[in-house]
Length: 316
Image 1 (spheres, rainbow, N blue to C red):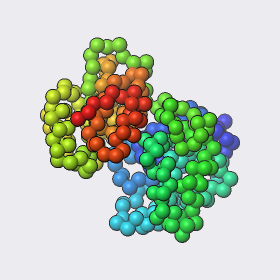
Image 2 (tube, one colour; image 1 turned 90 degrees about the horizontal axis):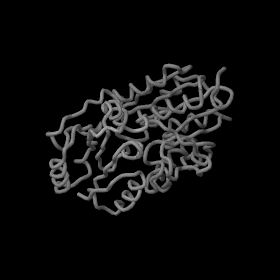
Image 3 (tube, rainbow, N blue to C red; image 1 turned 135 degrees about the vertical axis):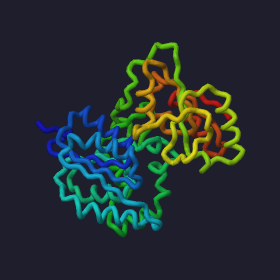
């Protein structure tokens, strides 16, 4: 019997590997076997392809839509909607699953799917960061103009119409009222290892994009004094901040899945700056250390959230 949470077919809309991983968990949790998948990417990374393939295998129909980024922002949205409307002819959905509620393409699909019930799921730390774009609608002034021109529902209206939201961030306020949130365990670390052996991972970031030269120097010096087994590069990180730590090749895996795969019975310690990985990993099974580097006006809020995720804070 086909089951999509409602009778009929469900559509899952993804933009990132993490979103696809969460969709995979929802599909299994709700025993959904009548569903379609649309994965929209402007990166076309190995990771994008890997996690798209993970969920497309049992789907009724699937589409991987890659649109190369244009310099003029509105063109990105117009091209994605135009390409999608030419290729995709399915519309018999009773439920839609969406994380990127700011996506013009996905809001176009919402508009076209009259009568479909709307379900949300996490798009990362933006779902609970009060200074993030899903909570601060003043950031959407230009986007609201585009939405009006294209006759699309606004981000605010989509958020308001979410019937139920699936989250991996238990204990955090999300974009819908708490009573409408259902929690998911997405990353499998079992019941935790009792091994005395610890393997330490450093999560890279595009540090040179937002840290000063002095802050980069301090971070390098701190890392150099630690015993770190593996360095996991960020997708936008061209050169790691330190060369003396072994790079752990991801082969398309999310950092969280890569860590789990590498443990081999050892206990994990994860060190990072303000990375969603620290929020995504379970506090019960992972020792997590946050490096407080950037001392800007938002750091107090970041530290508050990171402590709530069960992280030890180290000031650099």
